[in-house]
Image 1 (cartoon, rainbow, N blue to C red):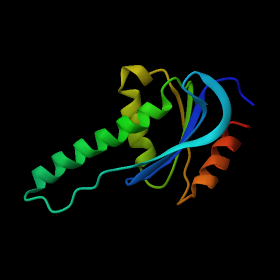
Image 2 (tube, rainbow, N blue to C red):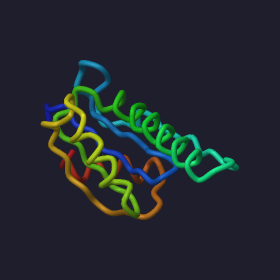
Image 3 (cartoon, helix red, strand yellow):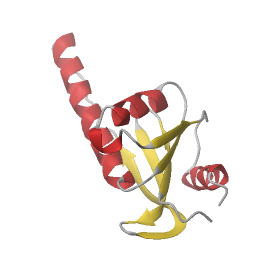
Length: 125
């Protein structure tokens, strides 16, 4: 068991399953903290408006994830496609997370329990 505050998550464009070993200040057992769902907007009148709404919704999605991983020293991000790289790039551009040690993985659809096991395995917990 690590005594560092670490987090892991599975992410795609629609949701993120966040696992941490800390709740605020205490290092505890790993647990699924929250499933964060992204807002998806449909039916905009123009491509420009749709793009603006998508960027706003993605920023809100990432902010919700940030709240759950605050105080982590290490982060493991897994999921399909390019969502992991996009989140990593967002975090590294955010001053609070520029020194966060981020590792990426690739996994198809996982259940909450599978994400928990994957994160525990990654951190040897």
